[in-house]
Structure formats: structure tokens, C-alpha cells
Image (cartoon, rainbow, N blue to C red; front, side, top):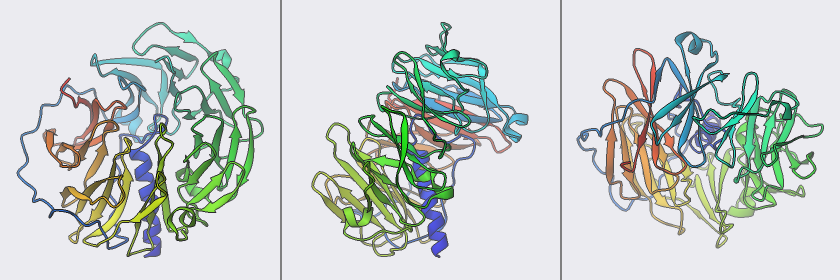
Length: 467
């Protein structure tokens, strides 16, 4: 059972990173992650009302024209203002062996597809080579040249000579996109769009596959080593130093640093210490003892969410070897932590909405179905309410701006309000499995995938505000 819980812990980490991926990293459209079937702990929040009976499926709302249809489609990302969306299409031959695909920029407002032939990549976004500049342009590290242009425009600026080595991945960026961290085959690079300045990070090439995050003020980047351990990149000097040790290995990428203020970050989990609080001066503390009055170990994970205007943050702690209280929530504004208690089903996973208002909790029912519950993050001890349930898998994506969620039942998607679950719209595609893949940053559009049982995928981008 311990190994099952450990595997579910890392499934939860992967699921959350996929669901709340940044602009720089999102999962591919090709294989929606199935909900885990392991049941680690017999606990759920106490509802205020009994779970509602499932009613007849309402008539689906009309979906717009598909954005794309192909043997396989790989998701890119949204522009910061939520107007443009990038993706790749792959032929059956390309999909079978993960060959590069054709790249497109979709203008969601004009419903226009714009191909860009000089940029092909395989069926993964892990090695993405494009970024969105502060002025709204897209910068692409293409197959031959580095180019910047307004999406769907033809006025190209060439910056190939600014980059000493071919860039293999855009790793992360500051919130205002004033600085980016990039990789080439053997090195890190700091890129500053103002003046297109490029600096090599001296003598450091560990952690090339993930685990990097800028501090809120942009002065530092926390980096994970290949075998774990936290390194600190000083942006001003472009130098790196090891500041804390912990064991990671294959899970280092999932342990990405989460900054809670300008000088401290938490590691989601580690193989030896579990979640860790680390200071830029190298002070290492147990997350459980620091925030929750109990020690935490490797069978646990912590997820942080910071409100930049106020500086307050919340920590969501999952403990998979605690069958009585597997879920805790810390509120920095009043230095208070709470345990979510009272059992009805089996707790599986939880996450906080990007807009900072809602906590979602996934449970397994006694007949191995799935149900989602929702409660406000604040105040503490808010009572969860039943949101949705299904006898099989169920997928949920939260709107990053509005109080809405898209719930996928495989045969349909329902758009619901929070927390009362008022039905706003239902989407379906005849004889196809349909999934919600996420909202645009401004919450105006919902990305939908439909999978044909005979093969092939269709991409929809649906307005959710009636526009």
C-alpha cells in the first residue's frame, strides 16, 4: 500500500502541474491523463447538503467550427492576453513515431488559423522553443532562424545572431516577461527582451529538463539539480550556487520550486525529506513543522499559491500515509492551518484554483466512481459543497478569472458556476470522447479536445462568454 500511495502522490503532482501549467509548460493534447484508481485514504470533507442525483443530460450547446483535425494534435500555449493559441498537427506517420508536426497560431477573436512553416517539433511541448514577448509579439527559435513577429502578421524581425547556440527549450519566465530562462544543448541562458540581451549562465548545466522558477521580484531563479538539490541563479551576475541538498532523481522535475515570498520557496516533495522550505541563504526547514505543527516526510506533497498584490500565500498539504487527516490548508494572512476532516468516501487529490478563490477536492466513491467537491479557500474551515460526480472518470478545469469550471464526463462537458454548480452550457461531439483542456488566461475561451474512436483528434476553442 505504501508504494501505491507513493505512486498516487506523484500522479497527483503531475496532474496538478498539467492542470495549472504555466504558459511555458503544458501537457500535450494527445493523451488525457486518466484519473488514478488507487485509493489512499478514507476521508472527504463534510457536505452541507446530500450529493445531488444525476439528471438527464441536457441538450448540448452548439460548438463552433473546429480549429483543427489531425491524427494527433499537440497543444502549445496562449498569448498572455488570451487572444492567440499555438498548436501542432501531426499526420498518422508522424504521430506513430513522434515526428515533428506543422505549427499554427490560432486567432481566437478572428477565428483564423495562421501556419508558420519554419518551426516543427515532435509530439511533446516539453522542448518548446517559442515565447511571448511583452509587446505581444511571438519569438520563435525556429529550425533555421530566430524570428519575432506579431501573430498572424508577416513583418518578421530576425534575431538569429543574438543567440550563440541553438535554443532547445524555453524553461520559465518572470511574471511580467522581462526575463526568460532558456536552454541550449549544454547550457542555460538568460534572455532579456528589452534590447534582446542574451547572457550565458556560467558553468552550470544541471537540471536541464525542468524544475526552475523565478522569484516574485525576478532577482533569482530556483533550479533543481539532476539528482535533486536546490541551486540558486543570481540573475544580476548569471551565476549559480548550490544552497540546499535533498534527494530527487527521476522526480526532480515534479519538485519545481514554488516561491512564497522574495526570499523563500517550497519544494513540492523530495525522496528523502518530503516537502521542504528553503531560504535563499540556504536555510532548510521541514514544511510540516514550520506551517502545520507536524513533521512531514516523503509520503506527502505541498502546493503553494501566492497572491502577488497582497503578498499572502496558501499552502495545500497532502499526506498520503495519514488515513485520518490527509489534507491540510495553511493561511499566511493569519498564520492559521486547518485539517479537512470527516469521512464519507476516499480522498484522492486536491488543488487550488488559479484565481485564488476555490479549493477543489477529488474523492473516490465506494463503487470506484469519482466526485468533486468545492469550497472557498478563505476563510478557514469553510464547508465543502458537492460539485459533480460520475461513475467512471471525471475531468475538471477551473476558469483562471471567473467563478466557473468545465467538467468533463467523456461523453459531454458541462460549464458550471461556482460554488452552486448552476449549468451554463453543455458541449458534446457525436460518437466522440470529449475533454476540457483548460481556459485562456483571460477566461474567455475554453479549449476542448474530441477523440474519434476510429482514430484522429479534433481541437475546438469555444467562447464561454457568448462572444
